[in-house]
Amino acid sequence: MADSKTAKLSFDGKEFELPIHSPSVGPDVIDITKLYGQAGVFTHDPGFTSTSACESTITYIDGNEGILLHRGYPIDQLAGKSHYLEVCYLMLYGELPSAAQLEDFENRVTNHTMVHEQMHNFFRGFRRDAHPMATMVGVVGAMSAFYHDSTDISDPWQREVASIRLIAKLPTIAAMAYKYSIGQPFVYPRNDLDYASNFLRMCFAVPAEEYMPDPILSRAMDRIFTLHADHEQNASTSTVRLAGSSGANPFACIAAGIACLWGPAHGGANQACLEMLREIGSVDRIPEYIARAKDKNDPFRLMGFGHRVYKNFDPRATVMKQSADEVLDLLGIENNPLLQVAKELETIAVNDEYFAEKKLFPNVDFYSGIILEAMGFPTSMFTPIFALSRTVGWISQWKEMIADPAGKIGRPRQLYTGATYRDYVDIENR
Image (cartoon, rainbow, N blue to C red; front, side):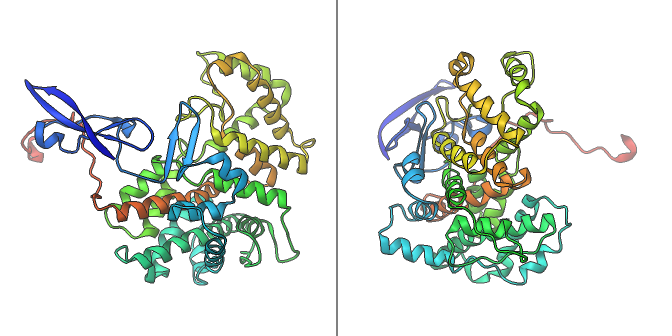
C-alpha cells in the first residue's frame, strides 16, 4: 500500500490533505481516517458502497470486467481445476498447497466432521417446522458452549482449531438441520468420502438403505461450494468482521454472518429465482414474463439475471452453467416443468437484444438454484448451503482481521436528523 499521492479537501475556508493508498490492483483509496480530527466533519456513505473498511489480501472483484480472484487466482480456474478443500487451504493460508500439505489439511477437516453428541439434544429443542437457517444460527452460535478449547482469539493455535472445526462441522450441522426439518434421523458423516459427497449423503441417506451420490452430483456440489467461498466485503462478511472487531469468539462471529446471509437481499437470491420460475409455471408463459420484465412500469423483475457488483457478466456463472447442464443431463428434465422453464428462459434471455444491451446475463444464483432443485433440495436449504460454502471466506476474513495490527472495533458514525436538545416534561404536564 503506497502513500505517494494525496488528495486535497477544501472545507470551511481551510484545505486538508488526505493520503491516497494504491492497492496491488483496483482503484486508489482516499484515506479519511483522520478527517474528523482535522476538519471536524464525517463522510456520509449509506451502505458503505464507496468506503473501504479494511485492508485485505484475500479476494478481489472487478465488477466492470467480470473478474473474481481469490489470492490472485481466477475463480474459473479454481472451479475448473481445483476443488473446494484446496480452495479452503488457499484462502486460509494464502498459497496453493503441496500434495503433502493438502493431504494433511483434508485429513484434519475430515477428522473433525462429527459434532458433539450432546448437540443432538440441542437440535431437539427447536420446533420441527423451524427453518434450517434459524436452526443453524442457533447451533453455530452454541458451538462456543461445546468447544471451550478454541474460543480464545488471542491464541493462534485456538484460532486454527476453531477454523478447522467450523469448516468441518458446518456441512454436518446444515445436513442435521435439514434432516430435523423433514422428520428424518440424523446421518453421521463418513471419513472415507470427500467433502461434497459426504454432505450429500448426510442429506439424502436413510438408515433403511445406503445412498451413494453420483460423481457428477458430487462435483456439481463441490463447485457450488467453491463458487460461493468468498465474495469480498459483502454484507455477511462485513458482519463477521464487525462482530469480530469486538473480540467475540469465532463461533459467535460466524453465527452473526449466517444471520445476515439469511436476508433475502443477500443469500436468498437463488431461492427468489426458483420462486420466480414457479410463478411463470410453464414454457408457454415465458414470452408474457419477458414482456413484463421489459416494461419499466411493471414491478416484475427477472430474478437470477444481472448482479449488483458485476456490470458485465458474473464469472462464476459460466462454470455453474456447465455444472447445471451436466446435472440436468444426468437427471433428465422431461418431467420437471420448473427446470424446463429455466432452460427455455435462459435460452430466450441470452439471445434477446434487450437483455444483452442491459447486460442482464444469467448469474450464479440462477444456475445454482436450478442445480439444487434438480438434486432434490427444497428451497429452504438453498441459503444453508450458501452459508456452509461461505464459512471459509468468513473465517479467512476473520483471521485476517484478528492479525491486523491496525484493527480496531467497528464504530460507524451517523448523520443525525432527530430532535435537538429538549427538557424532560413530567407526565402530568404532557
